[in-house]
Amino acid sequence: MSILPSSRRTAAVAFILVVAMLDIVAMGIVIPVLPPLIEAFAGSTAQAGVINGVFVALWALMQFIASPVIGTLSDQVGRRPVILISTAGLAADYLLMAVAPNLWWLALGRMIAGVTSASFTTVYAYMADITPPEGRARGYGLVGAAFSAGFVAGPLLGGVLGEVSPRAPFWVAAALSAVTFFYGLFVLPESLPADRRMRFTWRRANPFGALTLLRSHPELSGLAVVNFLLYFAHHVFSAVFVLYAAHRYGWSPWTVGVLLALAGALDMLVQGVLVGRAVKRFGDRATMIFGLFGGAVGLACMGLAPTGLLFALALLPNALWGLAMPTLLSLMTQRVSESEQGQLQGANMSVASVAGVLSPMFFGTVYAVSIGDAALLPLPGAAFLIAALVLLAAALLGWIVARRAWRAADASPATGEDGRGPM
Image 1 (cartoon, rainbow, N blue to C red):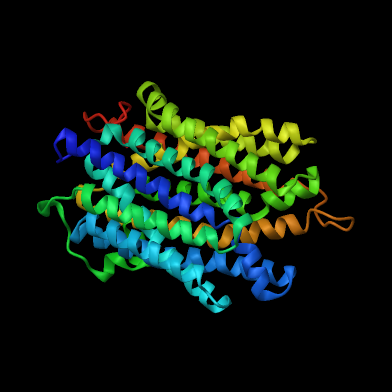
Image 2: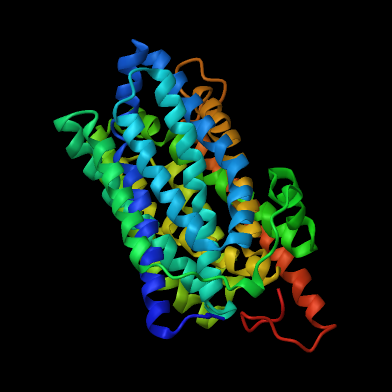
């Protein structure tokens, strides 16, 4: 339950949503200009593609290492100082990249960004602190909607600023992060009281030690695998979407940007509006499984769409995917104590980071062997179809885990937070 008075809790929720949106806006702003900047340093498009892939992997690797440390640290010192230090660090990092003289400095900037962006774990833990268990799916849905809003605005703003100067988006990203820091300095209250804190230990904070928490309960470990599969499938977009859209439908970068903005807007609608209503009527588990199934249908339609119009229409069922993440996180938070919320979110981010390292390489390889006259797998949309199968596997596993928990409910008179037995 929230420990804050209602007025301060409202301010805290508002701040967390602003943090989530501004952080994603700041990240999204640099998307249109970072690859060209890398190309300018590298000297060739082919080499730039390889280096950009390495930068993505570096960012994900640093998230894997830093997320459990930051999450566990927030369990000891509180959420407020961790969030503020991370936003200040992100501002400094964008300043570094704005003046970076070569690729080595850019690489250092991406590594620092991976560390500071790991504060997302604390954002989710903060929301768990101030939200009762039965309201967490809706709370996480609001955070997801804020992320989506940032994803809509960021790349579009970055494209406009990139026309002025390839360095301009980095300066604006630094300014946005600085605004977030000063806003939080005056507005953000602490959410974790001293009597609910847990001592920091490296056993809990190292990436592999943090993952032991996910093995502490059969249902929790099963949901962690669902989380991995969800993120693994999602990276098909970052790996091949732009290349696939240009190759199969002849779309320009502007068209791709507009479609990405549309996808972000749909996701914002689903997570910000539909999640709370769906959970209230159907519960966390059913909503999660339905969301995973809807995402699988959307991905399959994308992989099979013969025209760009049908591909765009496939965004509608794919948007139901947004129902899955908030409810999955809600179910997982109900399996650990209040003092372990930061560690849980750190472990979740580590799982996502592993998917972020492996998935782009996998789907990039699938795409490479599925196009061209001598394609080993002559189906251009193969990557999307495989991603659909991954989501179907996640939905099936989620159903099995839920069924196991439902049976366990027969041994206890308690009722879970989603109104359908303990989870």
